[in-house]
Length: 87
Image (cartoon, rainbow, N blue to C red):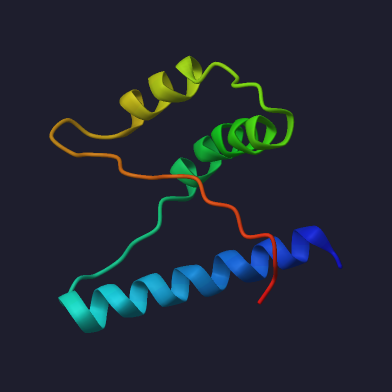
């Protein structure tokens, strides 16, 4: 399995499902911030490493980057999750 291709396919499917849910259930528009996605990559890698080796890395740089990126009066909500399967 090509991990990069699988990750891209999962991300594309999740984006489609989230946008459809927000549109159909809540009447909300959805936009994606590629810069914020780029900023999340190191944090996700750190969470994955913590899960594998059991050692937590410092999240200070990530937290500072998010604080600078998210506009005043807005809230960043997110959580890491792990899927050990493709279906």
